[in-house]
Image: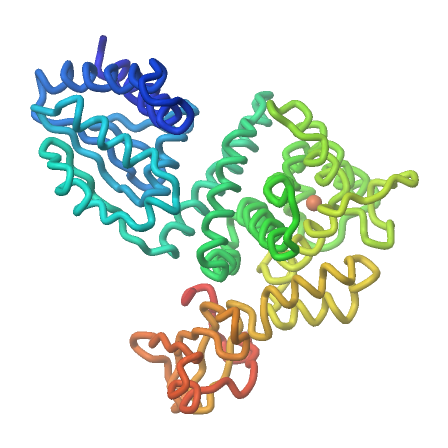
Length: 444
Ligand SMILES: [Fe+2]
């Protein structure tokens, strides 16, 4: 067995071991067997090498120097599991015993609640572990958000390439991305929503897909809906049909001709067809993709012939509109979040967009949405970087300009929910960043 094959065996047995520990009673062979397999695989490798290192590097599982991309579902599972437990590296040393492996996997199979109270270093020491080292990842949720965001973007890029090559993208990857987003949203909603403000001119389509995925999922969660994840997946994949639209039409600045419009209008049904070819597809996901340009008042395209809009479709339409308005595109200036919400409420509520869900969306983004530019009582100019859900008027901000109107060399973070800070620096008004020539995304 070469090293790569050994590593794959190791990954597969690790995933089985964790499943076994969670689902089978003590003494059951499904519980014990993978642990013994892991032990003998490690012994085999460690006979010739001093140690074996499993690491999470960027968004990839790496064993020794071999990266395991999304190609194997078990590698993805193991990556997710280690990531969830904030484990950055697992190192096994020569001398490892089956008892140590059992203890390690007991730790890896722990549920969130139990694991929360565990200090990994203490745990290893308490159990006398000598031949295993665990290195914890930084606990910064913002970094984790960025990592999953990058992963999602990569997935969209690859999925679109695959479709162009006549292949079918994998649904499991979209599922695991949305599950990760969901976990991050539970811990810090604004960290993830802030990322949707990071638009990047050249990668508009990919960022937009990810942003709509995040915003639809966040809104579905805000509404407390079952099936929020499928809405997130539909948001992520809503424009996948554009792979069939000629690039000149997609990137055309200015108005499309009637003929070009007819071609453009096919992307929802093309998208729905692509999704129906994916493994594990759900009919609701393809329906939401099909309907994402049908407006609340049933105008738009394609014509629905009396069929009702799925509830989830409304959330995708709202997120799609918001992200389109706040994004710089070849033919459009970028509106700041507050302006975008005002347009949506003033012009589109009850017509293009579902009025009730739009209200919840506005509430979710807050009075000063992440990415807004504000003037403070101190005369300084700041950007909203994170919301305090219990107190929407006192978000966290990053001060970028002093009262003299000059940019600070280094932006200063301030939490306005802190009473003294708020007395000194409370928000007086919103400012249009364009008038001050501020590139908001540089600071988020
Ligand atoms: Fe679209």
